[in-house]
Length: 323
Image 1 (cartoon, rainbow, N blue to C red):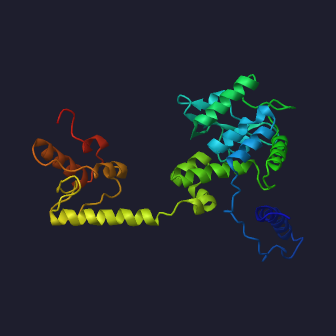
Image 2: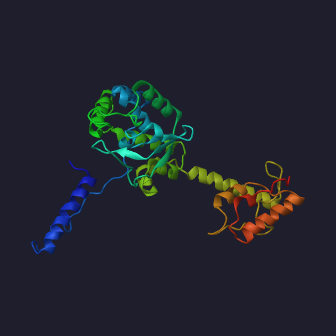
Image 3: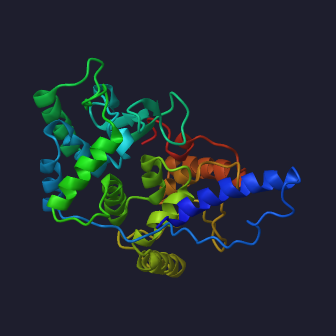
């Protein structure tokens, strides 16, 4: 049975052919008009293996291909990207994996999906993946130009051969037929989101074309923000009440936050102003109680907030030597 996406692709081809026949007066009307296509379900339940099962899958692969499992598990690579990793991909003192290309089904190097030749993406490189790469290089070496995984018939690995070996190994590990190499990419994304890593970062590391794609697939795995939002709003409200009543806060200070004027509201910056992140960081600091630092603080905040100028971040801090 064909999947909904396959049916959609077939429909596009057939409808285009029949539309051409209508234009050439071979048909009076295309029979494709009015056909309702099945909806493609983007998000689905993922098969989450145990650590022992991942180890078993790794052990069941040919030894010189085993490290691919940890690259997909720890960096979220697609299978073609994992097969194209070379020694040159590790940068930033082995803390970052830079992927530039992928191996296509014919064992040829091609640009990354949704990318042009020469484009790349950087991914955090866990230490256990580093160790797997080191172990692979020590035991199996690389190709003459530094690619980790060597094919049997060609220089690089044929993806179909790899996937067949992976499926056999997964079956021996007790995993269902639906568990494929791409499932390790799902496991990577699920783990990252469950640990609170922002979906914007996860989307970038996965190499998705847009964050909407990431949210469609993994949005249901993001921890609920309701409790965090309620706690943050309650905390801000209580702090505001303390400031208005003059009651001391936990650190004994009663000063207003930066940008606040007695009886007035804190002005919110609009577009074209200083970066929001810089303001958010600075708003956590309290105004100095008195002295020259207080006047310099007021001058800088009025300059940045009152005039809405594109003030650089260092203006938010006291100038060097002002303490």
